[in-house]
Amino acid sequence: MEELQDCNSTSLVALPGSLVLHLFRLFGQQDQSSWQKYILAYFLLVRDEYFSGESKTHSDVFCDISELDVFPYATDLGSEELELNEQKPILKAQSGGDSSGNRSNDCYFPGLHDDLSQDCLAWSSRSDYPSLSCLNKRFNLLINSGYLYKLRRKYGIVEHWVYLACSLMPWEAFDPNRKRWMRLPRMPCDECFSCADKESLAVGTQLLVFGREYTGLAIWMYNLLTRSWSRCTPMNLPRCLFASGSSGEIAIVAGGCDKNGQVLRSAELYNSEIGRWETIPDMNLARRLSSGFFMDGKFYVIGGVSSQRDSLTCGEEYNLETRTWRRILDMYPGGTSASQSPPLVAVVHNQLYAADQSKNVVKKYDKANNTWNILKPLPVRADSSNGWGLAFKACGDRLLVIGGHRGPRGEVILLHSWCPEGREDGADWEVLSVKERAGVFVYNCAIMGC
Image (cartoon, rainbow, N blue to C red; front, side):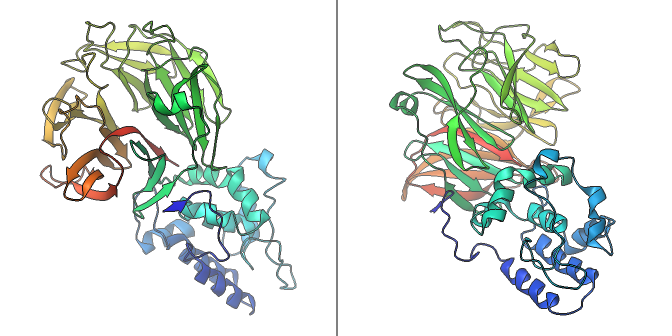
């Protein structure tokens, strides 16, 4: 199993693009036109075929490159630069060669303008970034600055990774496209935090893990740029058992319980770019054990309980523009009991899906009629533990169901995938991966898309 923090890279073994770099050097020895360099850049762009979670054809990519309006001279790229003034001292563009044809050694790819080189790196798989950061100081500064992720957001490039913590292993990341597992560094928390119940949330390039230490409620943050753990800024009102959801670089947490067990209706917004929590207006009702999600640009909270006995069937919608909450009656019929897990919900292409914990089926929410329709059975049992130990997440255009299984090979964690749109409901669940020696209980799961 590969360590994310491992920098053993005397050569870019994990980067097939090394062949392309060799071609760059061959072209650099001749008086070749900029057009040929763009052709080589095209090959680098398509080698992984990671384009917003989907694969494009080579002809599609070629059209995308031709529409950049940067031909025939790479120096015309300046008008397309991002407004990232704070990054310019580190990421100052190099021409890759002077007017006499002599190549500069202070560039990412020999003979290629740095602006285009950075575009190429942005389109490559982010699983290669740790290896790239070990090439030299210049690559290390580029990868750790986060500039490539700003480029990816500009071009709409998204790769969704699964971050998982099971009973017998520390946090690990799974790349669904490459079917590749990567172990994160061990969290430097105290023993209480390790053993206590935890909640997780992925926002921007950060993985937030909420739990309890000896000194009280705490948040640990894994930073994808530095590939390390650190303490996150605490909430204005620390809480647990809250609803949460993220969209891009922001996340919202709502409800839950404070350190004294009081059920809350307050909510906070977290901005991962500046690492700051902001208190937003309260919900209409206090609730805990509820679930949150973003859909159609708004934040929703459904399910949960307001007390040990009172189960909530209504939902609430938060409008970020007007900063107001709207109550939606019977949005989650049946509600949630105090012994059940929070509602298992996921949003794919602004459509809401839920894993019914009692009937072991996937349902889809009808926005127009405020009703739920059954789509297909779940690939694992959700009723055996009242929904606990099971993860139901959206991963790009797919739904993921992650749960344990006991079989001839012992206890394993299975990752099932299904595309709810564009396919018949009768399509089978696909097993993305089988994680052995991981127990049968999923404690925490978060999906990071960047």
